[in-house]
Length: 329
View 1 (cartoon, one colour):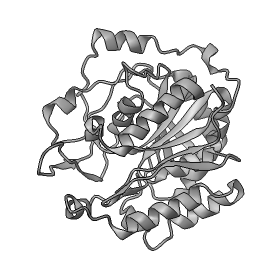
View 2 (view 1 turned 60 degrees about the vertical axis):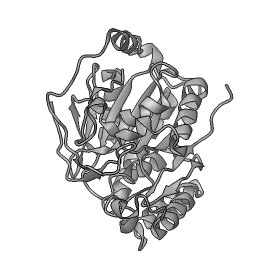
View 3 (view 1 turned 90 degrees about the vertical axis):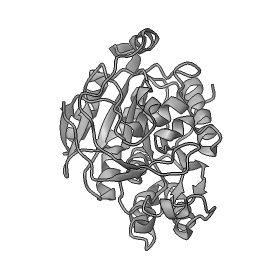
């Protein structure tokens, strides 16, 4: 298995607690746990044959603001309710045949993209310092070597170096997907193929990667980016419990909206300029949480972006975006 160690640091809010344990992100080999019979049965029901890759309409593209593992239990947060709503929209109206997802928590190489080619995948507990029950969460899912090969082919044609690897879904995906696609109440039931970001800060390069994958949308494959509109954990401790929201949280969040919802012919230039703003590095001291929306914006093609939710909070912003329209159910 290929595991990419990350240099980023997480501070996780313990629900109902008064302390903030330090959480270092790293992928942890050998931590897989067997799924329950119910989960195994559900995962087995996920389609992986070639017949599910023909779609009558173009898929939209989503950027989902997904917090830490504690988001799974933070049902009173506005982002939780919106994730649930968007998840229901995807399963009942969009009805994808497969999902390709980009997470803030997987960077490949400086110039190389990694794609999960495994059919049977589990989740990765890539965090420390949480109560024991967080390491018992399950999210039944199944990959698709066929869809992974489509991603590899399209990226290769675009001149992007690729590598197929076998790995589980990191918490940047499953913590939000458990909310959006509750395995019992709103199961996704389609293959999920995770693709890495580059391990660099070049937002234009990520935008171009999205452009290379745009045509997947015409094959019934939904593209989702998972990250945060604003994500500064260095200021997180200072603002927690004070009710204070940092000025850059508001300013960068609004600038992102202006860029992501711009006219398609202007969007790439505006998204690039966004990262040169004076508040960009305050909103994102490291860029891994904003890069997924650059991939999404690139994959949007000629479709307009729409902000579905924004919730600036402290030094974070839980914004959700959709590019493209949803066909009537």
